[in-house]
Length: 417
Image 1 (tube, one colour):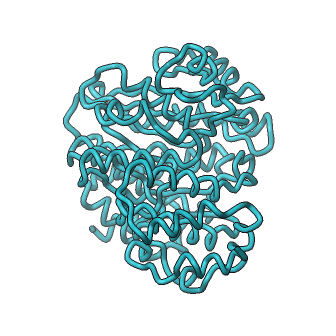
Image 2 (image 1 turned 45 degrees about the horizontal axis):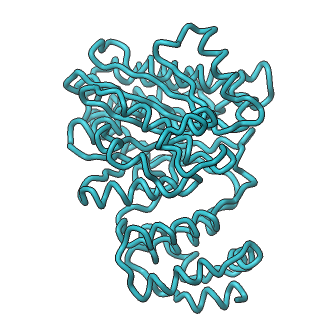
Image 3 (image 1 turned 45 degrees about the vertical axis):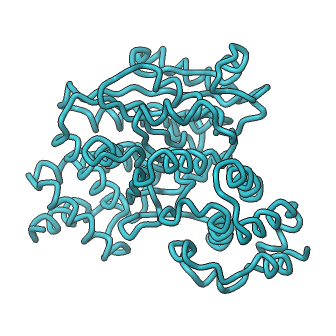
């Protein structure tokens, strides 16, 4: 990496704040300005990746927006070098997002996320007419009318040629096969709507079509989408999954959920042995080649929060060496979060037991852990979280694929069963 590229990067952000406020348009616009300046330096893809790596080594000494901008710059350079034509579909679900979808001058904590997501894609794809995109917003049965608000914004902005809003309730009523066995939107929590959006996007035959699902909030800047598209279109993977647990990942996460997350990963690793190299199954930033979506999305067992891992299981069963892990920048968005208090770890684990039994060959160790997970209720889970063995808390999740040193019986004791 040329020394002057690092000097440029530091000079560009010398006066920027250390943190990045997802509700502040000025902060978000700065990521675009800095990424543009890095690209205008003439740095090629390899040089920008070297900058990205160098910044990781000084993570606490530079503004967060520089980390994000560096990944955006790599992503856009990748797309500039990508052979077209190609098309991207971006899918996300909305549930009780009626405040976060509004701009911050209308509601405290508002992210104006639909407008911001469109702006991010417009920035990423500018200058390449042969690279196109569309966006699908799916209302997951929101009682506050998030989907209707999104529709109003689309109409106001004249975006109907690129942005569409679907309602899970309508698809269930129409008997769309992808919604089975849902009876009402209450039977879904995100998974049913993401499956509907991906399935709908895949019905249109397009050349070099990538379908990405993300979260409604701004935790993951869509300017990074080129990093996923590269793995699928240039390197032949069926899926490219954003990961917050790679050496080059940049993660700002608030709260005290780390040890609970480690327990979650340790447990699912004991029953799902098909994904030894995957650690971050729940990052809301995953891309799939469209024909793979057509092959796997219409008959998912899980319509709630564990749908991610079922998609990965089905992708890997279809073609083993088909999943690429992509380090991303991810900033926790909690101001108006709809999931902070849900704590769905136990229901997700119990859904994964169903996946184990439906898709994988049984073995004695996995059977023991599956039975343990099925026996857990919320009080027992709470006791277990308070008594996680140190052999789990003191290890990094990347080690759990090859570590099984805590038995199901030991965890039963910790849970008071």
